[in-house]
Amino acid sequence: MEIAATKDKIVSGAPQSALSVKAFRDPVPMEKTTSPTIEHKLRLTISNLNFYYGAKQAVFALSLKIPTNRVTALIGPSGCGKSTFLRTLNRMNETIRNTRVEGEVLLDGQDIHSLDVVGLRRRVGMVFQRPNPFPKSIYDNVAYGLRINGYKGRLDDLVEHSLRRAALWDEVKDYLKKSAFALSGGQQQRLCIARALAVDPEVLLLDEPCSALDPVTTAKIEELMFQLKDSCTMAIVTHNMQQAARASDFTAFMLDGHLIEHSETSKLFTTPTDPRTEAYITGRFG
Amino acid sequence: MSAAATTLAHEVPPQAGPRAFLHRLRQGDQIAHLLTLTFAAVILLLTSMLVYELWINSHLSRTQFGWAFFWTKVWDPNFDNFGAAPFIYGTLVTSAVALLLAVPLGLASAIFLSELAPRKVSDSISFLIDLLAAVPSVIYGLLGIFIVVPLMRTTLGPLLINTVGNVPYIGVLFRGPNYGVGFLTAGIVLAIMVVPFIISVSREVLLTVPREQREAAMALGATRWESTWQVVVPWARTGIMGSVFLALARALGETMAVTMVIGNAAAIKASLLAPGDTIASTIANQFTEATGDLYLSSLIELGLVLFLITFILNGLARILIVATERGGGRPA
Image (tube, rainbow over all chains, first blue to last red; front, side, top):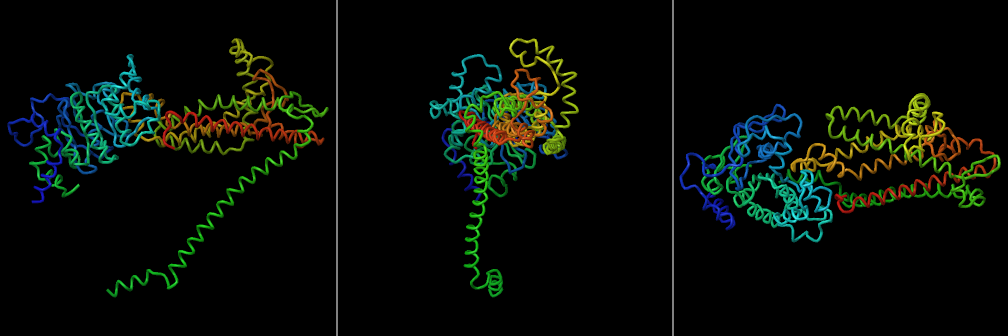
């Protein structure tokens, strides 16, 4: 009774745009989950990933396939390891002392641990929980990644292009030389997305990008993610299940460092196969 | 029901209690306000008294020499002819040398301690550095006399004369007789004295830079050094500049250590190896032997000049900070 009501709410809460993607659904029922199958091109293939903070293990034998140009949402209660897992995908955890990673993460068929870390991070961009623009002008924020990567072309064009992709251009085009801190929180977060997009990453990792934002701004970011899907593979960590339902194509549910269930978003939220997933999405814990 | 009432009765103070308590609180606020205001006012009062005393007591010298005091290059107690130019020059030059040496050294150390060194190493070294900042200046003067002066006389001085001394333009800074004492020696000793300030404050500031800033740069493909130099340091620049101005203030006013190694000569020489003197050092050295009224008055006017220099440089520092904040400043 209660469960059914929640399901209805989630489905009806999803905007039209997100629903239209479902045409893409695999008609053949899968055995346990409908995780991305052979017909999806895979951008990232994670197999048997373990992650440790010192002696404490945070991610356990996790295997996950992240399809190209789709949004994959990672949900789960606080401290379940979703952010940690996300940060292994661009090897950001290596900046934290005394951590260890095991397992394989293939980006377009190449193990990321054998790649040059600087080059990897250019290909796998990241947006953080709190907007974190640099103490520079709006223009210089977007241009930063281009400059350090030795971009030789016309910076102005690419800065404009990136700001347009992040749906921020119209709001800031007259203030490009102003400090990025003059922007509102939501604008700062879109600036951070523009900054990440400027180096044209294949994958964009979003670590709870809306948790510090109000609902209107959150809707803008979600709209933006939808638009970016043509050119970018996204993985988003979120606490907000409505957001996962609205904005993602696939959802992975994590609990205590384990991947519990991974399937198409519509399926996971309507007919979860694992009782723990059902308990979580109906709000019984977490 | 009755149990609850009893508990309540216990928690509520006696009859007139709540009102008296609130009343007391309000009075407490007023008292605290008055008290802190008084102390703040005392600082203002002290500063104005200081200026007033310097102004009144330098009257004789001011009327005698006027504005020429600032650019007169002679300091001759025998003929009662006094000018501050050599000491202003000495003060500015030694402080400049000190900052030139101390800022890169201090900043590099601070970056190492905050960004690269393991936390335990960083903390224990920082403890030692804070200790260094508390060493009395006379000790640094002794260090200067026993180590820096001989080193200058035998090794560093000749080396500079034979190498940089031959370079056009800047060579003029390293020519002439080398006594071991002089502007450069004083600058080096000052640098050693102020470097702990720069390291200590800059490290603290660098450590407060949010982790997200560093990660944002790295996520764009920045190397560790790029993220440190282009993102972390700019974020901390206001604090780092603050540490530099703190160091400058100390260098400008430093007396004892400078007196011991600068050579105490009232002369303006282009060479950094030549002996000279600073304002603070001159006052300390000559105050007890100032026999004439004009002599004493001139020394006091020197004090006024030093106050003025400090005031102006601090003002410039403020302007500089405001200027760099513009166009990319982080929230205060």
